[in-house]
Length: 281
Image (cartoon, rainbow, N blue to C red; front, side):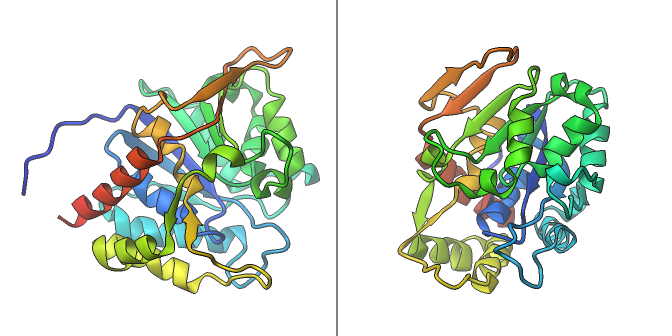
């Protein structure tokens, strides 16, 4: 095997997602786990929108799906996997995920902490509401929302959580709205070829998740699949902040807010396939 270059972790990462929904979240989780510049310290699950209810749609079932994938991808270095809230933020409930996010954020560590959320912001909002001081101890990278207020699942599933999180004045946020994250797509044929046959054990586990996904009535799969949940890896794993972007600041907001308007899909997808193949090699 070709000797590898020495690459050191550049950040600690908490990965939060609704794992029992679109499998692109699981694809992104495997990529995070296999990236040597990431040190994944916590994985947390969020609930699915009420319109997507099936056998494994609860936060507990989603956490189990994530834990099963972690065991396939990286069994020797297993991060903690916790279930998120069964209620939306407006209900005022807490969750093991919020507790765990606060716990990790309050730990002193030389590496910066990045909270990656590619689903509803419920667990993030609960953690910030529970302990406002963690705003300055982590940064958030979120996949969701829209630049034009068009319908978007991650924001619309829990609007109260999104509004609360973006109102925090000291929280640094990098944001991939739908106009950016939908740029990360592959053909269904490429997805099947790479995951089903080309990327070993990890690829097969991920392809099984796509095949087993209950497709809601009225939703039809076309020739492409969006892998938008992988966008944060451009920041946490690849330092590709040269992608086109526009920085904005709202009145009363002291921390940096960066919205990405385009992404380097070629770099992201190529690194993902390579990481999956190198894992088996």
